Image (tube, rainbow, N blue to C red; front, side):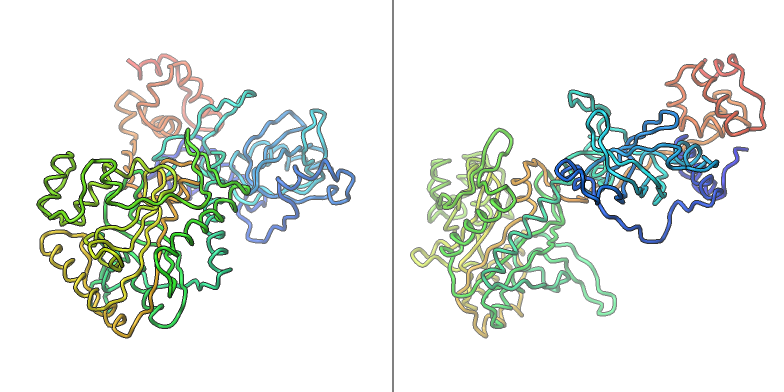
Amino acid sequence: MLNLPKFLISHMSRHLSEQEIQRREALKDMRSRGIEPFPAAEYYITHYSKGVLNNFDQTEENEEWKEVTLAGRIMTKRIMGKASFVDLQDSEGRIQLYFNRDEICPGEDKSLYNEVFKKSLDIGDFIGVKGFVFKTRMGEITIQVKEFIVLSKALRPLPIVKKDDDGNIYDAFTDPEQRYRMRYVDLIVNEGVKDVFIKRTRIMNAMRQFFNERGYLEVETPILQSIPGGAAARPFVTHHNALDIPLYLRIANELYLKRLIVGGFDGVYEFAKDFRNEGMDRTHNPEFTVMEIYVAYKDYFWMMEFTEQMLEFVVKSVNGGNTTVPFGEMEIDFKAPFTRVSMTGAIKEHTGYDISGKSEAELRHICDELGVEIDDTMGKGKLIDEIFGEKCEPHFVQPTFITDYPVEMSPLCKKHRDNPELTERFELIINGKEIANAYSELNDPIDQRERFEEQLKLSEKGDDEAMFIDQDFLRALEYGMPPTSGMGIGIDRLTMLLTGQSTIQEVLFFPQMRPEKKPELPSRSDFEALGVAPEWSEHVMAAFGSVDELKKAKPTQVHQKMNGFRKKNKLDIPALQLEEVKAWFD
């Protein structure tokens, strides 16, 4: 039997590759030498790679470079006898380390270098190093290591992404499903991924700064709700055991924020996680982030100016003071003011149809004429939304406010002061996608009840995205809500725009994925069916993983590898003969 520790035997329900077995052997070897590969104590860091690389040239004579302490992950390892080089990756970048055997081990015992560093440390392991900064003959800023400590042993090998002198990348970790499912690996090996998420945080921080400087209050509202209100969407349903009631993951935080306006706050905002039990695609994830803000005594004209000023501020904050952002082959300019176009005007311009005052039957006829797919559950609002979404939205690339939506599309919005068939609502469209949505908020409780009842009729008709009637919200409105404007903006889509990403999955650390398909585990019998002797089948399986992988190799390679495996692990079984191995391939 292979001389494996007990903890390794427990992992055999998942096939371990040869590298994984070797790493577990290295773990065992470290512990046998009294080295704990997962120490608990704090490791104090004095410098990071970026600071050293950026500042050493200007301050080379400073005392601070004579002793520095860094920590990070080994990304490359180049052993050249008594001297070796390592690329260390920390949270800010990479820096080269230089290891010299006699510096690391000044005494007679050289095992820390010869055995631990050379044989037991692998790419992916975390180490801490102390040393001094110098420049190599090639001019590369480097840390000469005087001492090091193992901080964490990686038991799985990283994908090795290689780059040549011309910048060409090989063996890249690029499969989208693997990248999204194993984002932790994606962040380690793919340059630029971390920068997207850092910019996402900077976008939200800039937004907060803009609101806070104007005196608005950040708040938190319930995620579990008894009524999923504030939007037309299908909710996730759960159950509260103690109360024995159904609850819903919120689809929007609008109605709770308006309750706070009723309660006397002049301006409140929230960065919220919302959930909608709908499809997934390149721009939709069932869990997503929105920011909603409500300001008393304002209307949607004020909110349009506020929104464009806020976005210009955010873009300049994260984009080096520039308002233009590259997106594919285009440039999107966030310089205020943005273009304003009415919804009916946009539909007339791009379809030739004037939908003003049209009945449901007439709108269905227009959809048929335009080839827009509809169904029997759709009312006037949904029909208009389908026409606009399919025939108009893609034309608006630069930031554009689409204003004055038909009343049937906006059950929470105040009727237009000049045309009761419309509402005081706008959506901000950029690159053909809705980024923000805003109203002059409906604060007439009688009108609001009637709108909710219209939504109830749509629900009875089969529209499972129609709004619920929220009686407590109606009660709050009856206590009086001042004139208010509210706006919601999709943080995920805004981040996509400002980082040049074409899919929402690229701006979510852990997007929703289908369940992972588990590969069928190989068994010794699979190899024995080929003619592998029972005393060898376990070891061949450990070395190759599956019969398919074994078959990809040449018999001579297998023969050499397995006999080397036997020698290295001191297996008490006869050596394999080449003819014996060739028979497995017949």
